[in-house]
Image (cartoon, rainbow, N blue to C red; front, side, top):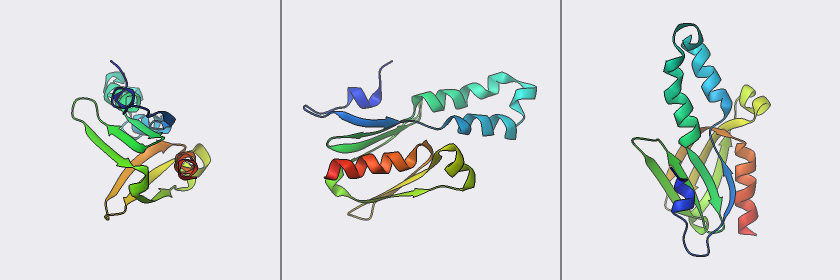
Length: 130
């Protein structure tokens, strides 16, 4: 099974930054539902989610894919993005995860939660504009 991002690149398009869900997402799930003590099999869907969700910036656009069996994709040309906001709580700042909110020029607003290194994602977006 190949990467969604790699298989959907346009001619001349290159990935400049790629991230995924943060490992804390799985750990917090395990502890909140006491899966560690009951059945480790319940953690498998969350692990699949961590390894199959993709968040990438290319030299032309942002590509985000969430889900494995049912899939949600979001793609937007870099020039059509008005801003990328990053929301992090206390633990998110310490551990390096947060929520990315992409706001497009037409008012489109998409939220992606529990992203690894959200500030670096935003910085890489800004680097592509210069």
